[in-house]
Image (cartoon, rainbow, N blue to C red; front, side):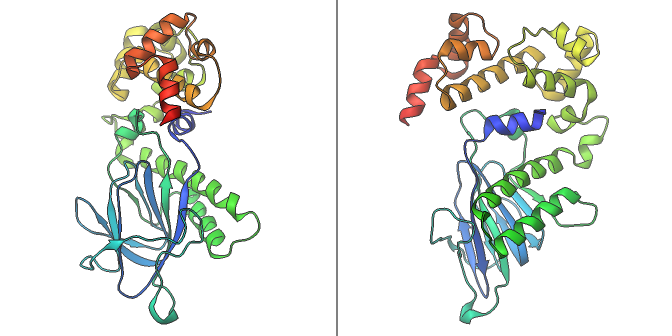
Length: 309
């Protein structure tokens, strides 16, 4: 998989949870903080987004909002409307009505809201650099792929058919990748002085090195061999990688290996020795020592404690 897909796969811990929000008249909902990444997709009508910090933001049909860090916020018909705790008739479901227009009138707003389940114990640096609110308005010039995903999601939610219970979560997964892609490819990432993960993934040299590390973490990588992969000398590659990513190449390699190891410990029954080999350690003892430095617990205890949580 490419680097973005690998990062999302390691961070995500389950299928997205979603429900349908339908509201009209005077209404306001307060969304509490969540452990994952919250999202809203406006399918019809308009409303106001009320961030915990910052000015109200008008939302219109086709707009997408992501709260990467699960920050609490509100949605309302007007900025001054008091907020009530959001309610649902089910814990999960793509057709749950959370609020209705009075007197059976047509709703002023139809949206899909929910949460992407993301591991918060060890967020990837790409996630850490995202702002509290990512707002992607529906405007000319925006990604055709993102617009298409929103339209497909809207059609599936408005008129569910056999298979919708599988289709909607799949579309939400697609939407998540498109949101991140749009943010990482925003205009300021293309500037020569740009830093961060958007610039790193778009950079031919650093992007090639990241792809190599993500695809083959078990290889005995060195700064020199990564530089060869990227087509630069050892020193030039190290400077470029560190300048864009914010971590030295081998520091990121260790970070990625330990993060991948933790996911393997939680999601598989592989013995610790097999996990060690998957992430590039020939010695189980060396792997256990490296893992404990990163997580504060040896691999076996980490697996058992997380399973009991």
